Image (cartoon, rainbow, N blue to C red):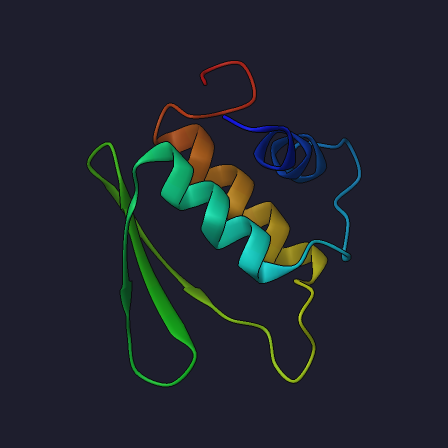
Length: 87
C-alpha cells in the first residue's frame, strides 16, 4: 500500500468522520485492496471485498464524501476484515 492509500485509510478511520475525503481516493484505496468495483445505475458504485458486498453513491456535485458515507465505508471495510488493524 502506498503512502496515499495509507493516508486515505487513516482518514476513514479517524475518530470523528471527515467530510473532506475525495471519493476517487476511496475508490483507489478499494482497488489497492483488491476489491471488485462495478458501476451501478446513476451514481451507484458496487464494491465487493473478501465476500462482502456494498453499494455506495458517488457524491455529486462535490468530489468529497459526507460523514455518513465515510461511516458506511468504515463499516464495510470492517465487515470485510480490512479495518484499520486488519490490513
